[in-house]
Image 1 (tube, helix red, strand yellow):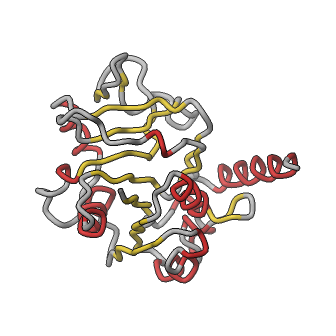
Image 2 (cartoon, helix red, strand yellow):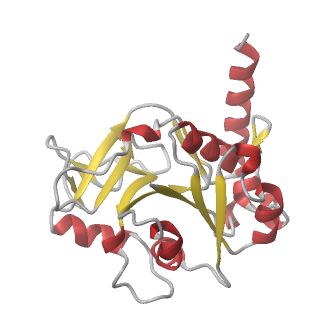
Image 3 (cartoon, rainbow, N blue to C red):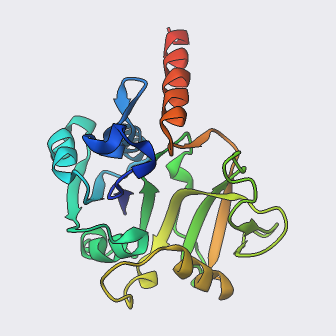
Length: 231
């Protein structure tokens, strides 16, 4: 099974930091944000990684090259202009499924999380088309995104919504009939939810959406303090 890291956004809320540095290469704790994802994917046994990029993508390729520094194999899906999440996945689909796998992991490049990717395994039922990692609502998203019921099914509506963590296990059939171009992911997921095809996991560990310079600084401080406590 392969994994994809979404790295095509311009990071406009992170300006001026992202005027010359793509958001996934911004550093926290002495390492680029995307480096933490590569390490976790490697540790979970996922070594074939696809990274899409558009804004300053050449810098991402220069920094990560073929992935050997992280003991993974990286291939790139280059976008002339951002295609949004589903559009980017649709373009990268041949790279994600060329080994015959129907399932692949997708991670947003602008988050930090201690979720164990080993928990994402293809469901045994034949109906599920997506498994979403959901987390407790942060201050900047108090109303959440989706409802996770007691049976592990995810719904677009319901009491006590949780926040989508930007980590998921997706089936190729979600994208195979999608026309190339700009497409957000949420409408596809909501359609699949209406057909009872989306399951979820509630991650109760650490998670941060690195959407502002202040959140990046907070993460940097947290990681450096943690490093200082390590023997």
